[in-house]
Amino acid sequence: MAPGRVLAVLLLLTLDCWMMSSASADVVATSAPPPPSSAPAPPIGWLRAHATFYGGADASGTMGTLTTNKVQSYCFTIPMVPCVRRGGVRFMINGHDYFNLVLVTNVGGAGSIKSMDVKSSDSADWMPMARNWGANWHSMAYLSGKMLSFRVTITDGQTLVFTNVVPAGWTFGMTFASNLQFKSSP
Image (cartoon, rainbow, N blue to C red; front, side, top):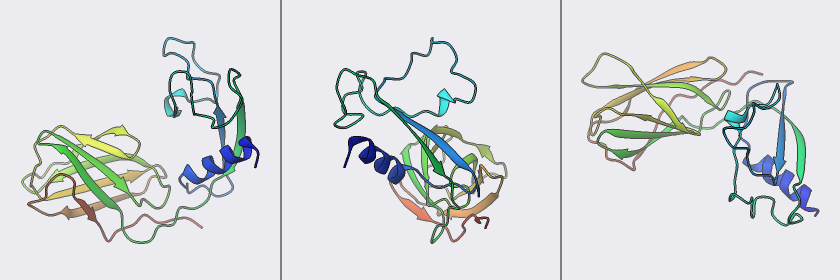
């Protein structure tokens, strides 16, 4: 199989799913390193903030066995499909006392999270969480061992509240599964 086709297969295997029927996403894979943050803004329609770069500063290994010392780019249009998941949304908690890093997995519907809040059993208020990287969200509050609830909004606008999904007495490194899941559109 040609290196470009191998790359296309790898991209398709690593992309998550979206809930936008009859829509598509354009993906560009290149062996060029990302531009410095001081570089001019990208062309209209390109989102540098959402680009992910894998590889070293010289892009070594990024494009597999493609020709060295020559920048190569491949463009793909990938159709978006409904994201249907079995089971509920899962929350894995890492970090330490004042840094709670929550990895959210098995997200149906749009498949990507827009915002997330946390509430502990000893509070009536929701605290917004910040996106750390990918599906990891963090808070800088002391929540260790407290019963936790999460309010999650995905990019298609659906919001679910996962009440007391994390029981009191939890420790870092544990994963908790809910019984709730986001709906997919036909």
